[in-house]
Amino acid sequence: MKENAVVLFGGSFDPIQSDHVDIVKKLQKRFYKTVVIPTYVSPFKKTGSFVSAKDRLSMVQIALKDENSVEVSDFEIKKEDISYSIDTIEHFINVYQGKQLYFALGSEMLQKLPKWHRFDELKEMVHFYVVERKGFAIKPATLRRLTKLGANIEVADFTGSFFSSAHTRVDIAFNKFHSLPKEVASYIKDNKLYQDYKCITGGFEVFDLSKERIKHTYQTTLAAVSLAKRYNANIHDAVTAALLHDIAKEADSDIFESLGVPPLPEVYQDVPKKVRHAFIGAEAARAFFGIRKKSVLDAVRFHTTGAPKMGKVAKIVFLADKIESSRDKEEGNLDELRELIFTNLNKGMIEVLERNVARMRKRGREVYPLTTATLEFFLSKRKPKVGAGIDRPKKDIELGEFISLQKTPPTKDGTELANRIAIFLDEKKARDITLIAIAHKTVIADYFILCTASSTTAVNALTDYIDERLSKDFNIEPLRRDLDPKWSAVDYGDVILHIQTEDIRNFYDLERLWSDGDNVQRF
Image 1 (cartoon, rainbow, N blue to C red):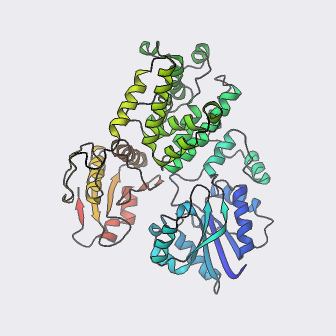
Image 2 (image 1 turned 180 degrees about the vertical axis):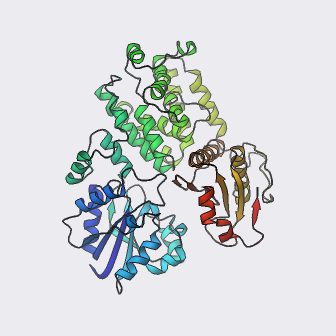
Image 3 (image 1 turned 45 degrees about the horizontal axis):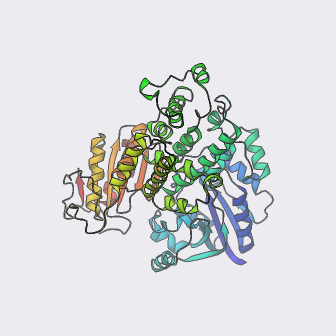
């Protein structure tokens, strides 16, 4: 045990799980004191918490009430503001004067550690205690890089679970509480927490879904959560679409009529039954469940056939449906396919579509035209080999210069990517688009792009639009995407995009913080 050391363990704990408790117990054996700190609003969450800070704090206190050397702190919750690690660490340095402070974090956060808020100060204040999570191996090269940057890194001698809070919330929607401490499960039931998806799972009986179909939907939704986390997609949208993807699979026309689900247009009447349910399902999602978001409806509509220019959520649900765990019984071990999909989303689309087309043709069945068109689309987007002769844009583009929107991936030059994003923002009527060159000031990126959104709805719409355009047109996915009602920050590596309402933009005033007189350009 480190007798003179205190470890801080923070998180949204939305909700706290048995695996969190297990990690706390292991930290307890290794440190003089373990401080567990539920966040108010984590800077790493795309949306806020699913339940109130008060409820999350209560659940943590309940789960850890018997742990003697553990302190549950409400420091971040009482701040009622964004929780940055350095603010918390500065507080506990004063509380535990004379003690060495450690900061526990999961291995999934290690790669982005240098981009944490005020990292240069942070690394001088604490030792980082890294708990390896399954699925996020700790790479020696990453450790060497962080050590070279001056960070003190110690790897824990135990591992943590990959099961996320999002997976747990899906479990709760299906009345499964196995990942939670018993008293926490009781608290959730008694207070009717995490009911967000109950309105969908509660409708399964109405649409006459069998137990086997519900089991498949559950497994598909878990797979969709994992893929959404892997590709920085909107987890809530992926879960909603996955829950609804087979909603019309087993109901008859009388049920649809009684529930107010409109019939499909005549053009769809001759569509094969296995395809038709997806189109009807999208109508049921809209008419009965009140879903209005296009990305969710498209994911339901195209989960069987696919479609050219599918959005990220649609790809995720399409693939999750094909690789959920029970599929192994039908098709044999799919681990190799899963590995491909978790490595490259578009390559996964090609592989699954090719398998589907080959299977249909082998059985002498006609391939639905939309499936063929989808496969042709993704094959056409496949990156050519080096030297294939494609003319690439020049790298010496002036800041703010308009770039031709040709369908070739941006080069590694941050200027080109920044300009492309600025063009897309302009298409969606973003205001005061500003590019700030910062490569000479910091290692975190080459450019910041700032723009003003007219409303909280516009913040979300602009963020989703840029995400979709870069994903569909150039296969570029964000490294991290943080979303609050009034702002979003999306990290594309060389470029970090900030979309803010006017009051937030004036408050943070990033132009003032990062300008040196000649590195700011209005688009």
